[in-house]
Length: 114
Image (cartoon, rainbow, N blue to C red):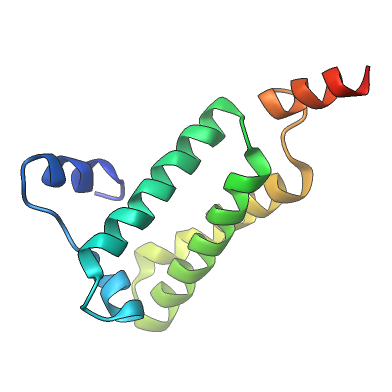
């Protein structure tokens, strides 16, 4: 499953999950804490994007994450990770434009302009 939910579920059950990509990038010393640090950032950014709050800041994380996972997927021949380039393109659009129509950021900027 391509989601953070299984990682949180395993942590709650007392069986923390490590991420193979984190292990290959950072070594095996801190793989579980770093996995959950990145999972926490991913979860918070997803919530921010859903609510339209801090859209550009969350898009920075998404752009970096999807660039890394897409490139690793491409070099390792994991076809399922190449979809991350499309997700990265969407994150870049949000990073450049924000979401001025339907976001809390847009409402705050309109209120400051008055």
